[in-house]
Image (cartoon, rainbow, N blue to C red; front, side, top):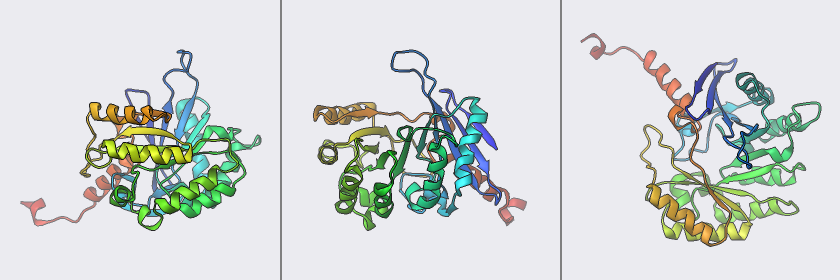
Length: 297
């Protein structure tokens, strides 16, 4: 296991599975509680797959493709390892690491039963968030799942034009299918979905993009989480200026949509999902690459 610590106390660890697969997890301690005192909350960002098949254009996880699903035991193992590293109990879980959780639904559901059970890890369902890039068949299964798990949707574009450009999943399940699936999930639940929206310079950060996002958030009675882009080596996307990010946030807030601006913790340790694994895999390729004439010149 390899552990990287961050200046903001975020810690990422890379675990080698029995077959040699590398899996990332991130421990994210809360800085302060609502009353201003130090919070005891420890959030773990959990991976559900080795790599990812969905190929979001701004994400490091999908650059090497999908290798396989994680087993239920491997999912639970990340939580147990995190508690050993942090020397604290993990009490908040987000399935926002490598992979699309809802495409590994059976193993995910089995893991959720262990996580929430009083005979297991005993973490409340409302302290667990599943993130999806818009995998509609998995969303339909989650809608029928009885526990009150929270849902975050990696929207990142509020029109098909933008999502087609940066999220290939949208070509198979466009907004005309995704939004009704989210409405189906919401039906009968006293929960607001969260629309995750990474702000990428000149791609989805204009006032017009903000108005499209507001329209979707109102329809879904959703809250919005804005995330200025965390640069990934080898990808062309850039982070918007602070001023442009604030302007986008203010436009959403003015429409009376609950909105937060979240800056990626662990930026100094490449904590955005898939970055550490990508670097390690690239190092292995360089180490074992065949020799060429240049190596002997």
